[in-house]
Length: 190
Image 1 (cartoon, rainbow, N blue to C red):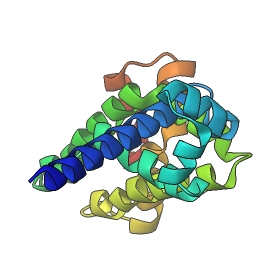
Image 2: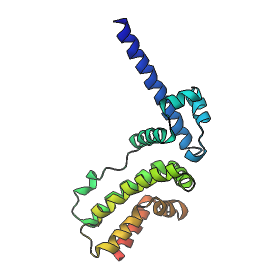
Image 3: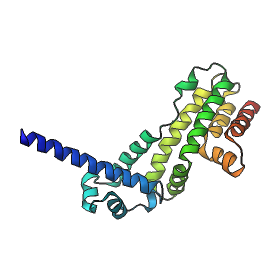
Image 4: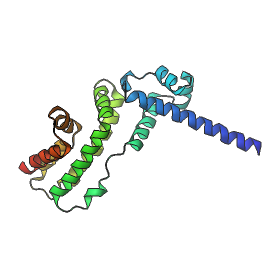
């Protein structure tokens, strides 16, 4: 009985160590950025040795995948189920943009760091492309019911972009409602 208990405790300690490493890495990725995060800094922040980080995550990809999964669980993309049942395309798009823009407000600082580092760090760019594809996959759903499908899809795709929201909300000073209204007008005009 003792042996089974010891194995369970060891597995629990390993899981806790892995969690601390992932938390430390996510914390660094969302502040200094993935491109500037070192294994040494992760180890210090997690309270472990460098070799412990490597024992749990033998390469950068494994560590990034774990961190990306952790981040997505903490900040899931808006659920399209809440607006997919809306028959009117303009109302459906309004609901989607409100949810996506609210999500952008929540994760803005993180996405800004990730976008910056995607310019110089290949793995960050790859993971960012996954997120962009997930947002982009909403485009086709949201274009249903609109005329001139190709132009509308392009306009909706533009409206869903993080940088579009950031320009409207941060650089131009629009409220979320004003940004959504502006993008609805834009989509309706194409």
